[in-house]
Length: 260
Length: 295
Image (cartoon, rainbow over all chains, first blue to last red; front, side):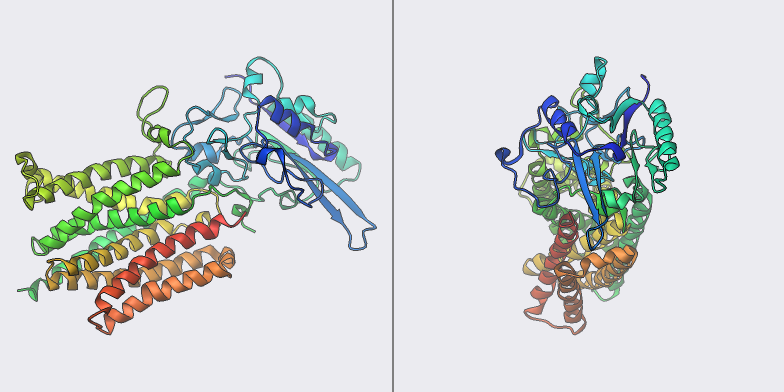
């Protein structure tokens, strides 16, 4: 297995140019939605709105202004599949279409997926959706095809400010810690890393440097694996089945004395 | 805020609601038929046969609903066979993977039991089918294995919803239990409704109705536990969905229970089970759509 590879996205240097979104769509030949006619959302510069089957990169714009609008800041973040070390989508996929690659990334094989959509609801980040052209669930592959031939992912290649950094996870973590130290030294006390350690789903192979709470960026504060509910749900269901059997025994047996 | 609110909907809609509903009826009819057969020792033969006669057509429709719901229906078999290696595809920790197998095997058992009833009634005259009669060892084995699979099919759909990260579904672990009890209550109602129009004995219908009353009481408790387990997330039902859920509890559980306890005869005899069945459909629709509408 090759070294685990991934993204470190430093949101503090994102300028919201969307070059990553464009590069991603171009390289992966993702179709336009609604014949290319996309209504303006009215929400800042964000007309992509969310990650889905034909948008594998999404630049979020978060405007934070005081009531009198004298003070304010603009948070920008290029969102993508987190390539979780413990991936919920991979857990539930009933066809085996979702696999972990030699780069420790998570990829949906389009020729195996049958569009059951279990992975869409299982993803803790709402990353996956159906690509209407293929009829299958799709998301970022971390440019598996490019990695195979030694190229970096299209989005990281296109990013003009090095907000999106691609490389071996160990190197990225080192880079992220250095940058965090730099920001904290400069007085940005709110800065922290999201998903760089194992606390979130065993680690996110696409992790972030953020300066506000995860919720502000539309990220779950405490993402979990779907399988956490498997055993308790199974237990209650078995208990239900036993109860039904017992109730039926009482109902169908008792009347024997009256049924002559 | 629960982390489940940061996820995307899998767009499971009417086809899946229909599957959950009809799958519950198919599985419930089958396990009730087997339980009646085991415990009533040959009395209620008509109701037992009815359960087997209903289960197979219902589960067949389920297979079609599930296939048409796929983004690529022609690849439905990828759930069972790995498309590249042609080896069996099975993941014990994926409810959908095990569910696909359970549904296939349950379909097989219900088909055999269906044929056995046809043979007993003289509608089919293949001698080999006599071995499938519930009185014969092979037939008994089929119905008992089929019953266990039917319990799985009736409950796994709720477990499947909980083994995601969606709001409501993944915020509770009581959906499997609730769906299972609802499968029992709706199928008992279905058997009573259809059976009372056929040749089933009054005593058999009476026992089934008594069983259904027990299930309805358990169902209220299970739904109560479900709502309580949601904690603050339950606030998402402070809207039309909550009203529909209340309508379901009042119209699909409390009212039929009252009719039963008040001993209403005549038209209530058909109305009460019909309400229970409709309540089961409404319950599944509320669970599916109220989560679907959240982002």
